[in-house]
Length: 430
Image (cartoon, rainbow, N blue to C red; front, side, top):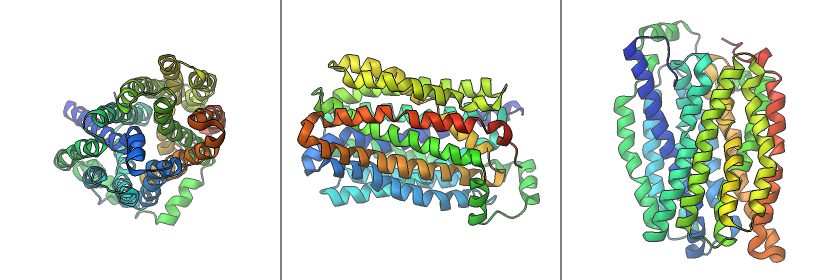
């Protein structure tokens, strides 16, 4: 999907790197998202409120994930750092902590284990984005990062399906153990197979030797935030993430409470619809960004802006449907449209900053996306559901999702505004 103009062996190396990073990112989202499908049985077993569910699925993970992401990215931006090694160690940590979630006996222990997952996952995407941006040309960057971003819908799908089936047949504790432990073995593959081109390619070694010393963290952040387009991208990506994480968590609970489905049934059907819709949207979003962005750079973000606006009425219809099969069918298109933004957003973030600040740019974007999105989205919707329960009972989640669907116009607006500045700023910095 994304190759550089190099030898056949070099092209194979790029493909191997992309595929391994995709598998790592799939594990990342399996371990991150499985808690959503397990939230309802966990809540029944441990006696949790909706607010505690939101805290467990969102803020506990996101706070440490975001805070640690920037210093780890800063470390990954150093020319002497092996980015595959950073990814491998991080993978081993978050996989082990996912398994420990299954041993939790109360809310506090589960919260600590989820914090550990966040600590590990902080070291995955910033070095992965930086690595991918080094091995593919700018004109293929959106497609390459969209390919990597397939880990989001694929991992979410697998987490939903596997987690739901395991919850029905063996229980939520065993589900955490079964999905967590294989990641430790994958970490060894990453450590021994992936190579960092900064340490193995002669031309890149020479280029790194001739580069100025790495920017201090405050200077790197100042450079990143000096781009007006990047700031608009932060608003757009954060709003999209807030709605995405919040809706994913509470849509799974919506189908269990309102439509009386089991975790296994929700995991299977919603996992397939959401996963396939996300995969199609992610691939199509990267393709549209590369195709139309090559003619006019502002169109790198046109598909996300248009897609999120189109998703609003379709999502409202889905949540209003009295039939769960019809609701699932109606959710396919908004899920696809809302997934257009992954590749174009991360690609634009890499192109709006100097090469030496790429991992910092990815970490900054992820900081806001995950602190606001993953951290506050599930928690905010859970608190709102608790507030609405006296009036609406189990239907409170439906009304929360109505509001979430309508708010999709907010990221659509900011993606459009950011796109207006891309001709002026994209790929203009050394």
